[in-house]
Amino acid sequence: MGNLVKKPTQVKPEKPEEYSGYIGDYGLVKTLGKGAFCKVKLGFNTKEGSKPVAVKIMKDGDNEAIEQMRQELEIMKALKHENIINVVNYGCEPSKTNSKPENEPTNKNFTVLELC
Image 1 (cartoon, rainbow, N blue to C red):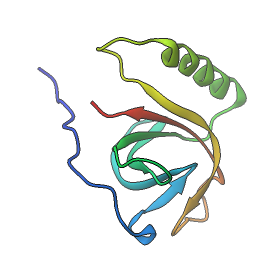
Image 2: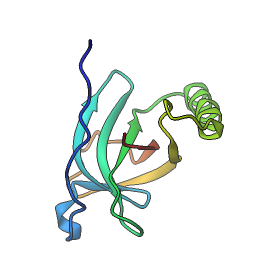
Image 3: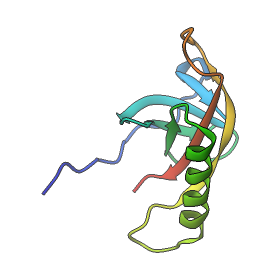
């Protein structure tokens, strides 16, 4: 069988400076994985709850790619099945990182997914 991703056992950081950055209402803790089009980070909703989520951050794309992602997410959000990861939230938000490289885009398209 292929590589299985293990559920992180990390607890929600207590102090804002313990997050590596923010996107929307989500504090980002660490990178879980990277791909050609996206980066996935462990995150927590800073306003409610302490349940960890996976925040999938899309690299800059053209409007057509962004629209295709939005349509796919609308479909995924409507699907409810035990074998499908739930989409918690998605959108385009200004990134707020503690240490932002010069080439880092100022807006991020993101998806928040439940962790299994």
